[in-house]
Image (cartoon, rainbow, N blue to C red; front, side, top):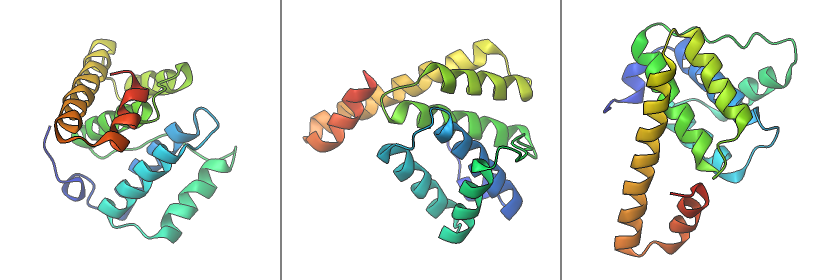
Length: 152
């Protein structure tokens, strides 16, 4: 799945909606880990959002009364969110039951089958294994320690 994230999420609303979903996944386990924060900052940079805009999204998600339903404009946005969300869930080495439940809830909201989500999870695991093999080949031991936490 090759895409330019700024072509998928062209409007400020669509970018913020996407990151709102990503942040909700980060908060799923109640802790923001370093890897998750770096993933979010990297996405924010790619989406060309300011630190202030990102801080506003964090504030919204700390509000228990905030509306967290995601309203994507099309199927491509939904699929990119699910793919990026699953990658995020694996990035800290612990795709826990709360994160899995959230991904399942989102997929139901988007009318995406359980089978598709399972296949997407397996694809992400395969991608991480491929990435790990490249890191091993080039001797990137620091990055390897992060991938090894995932259990790939």
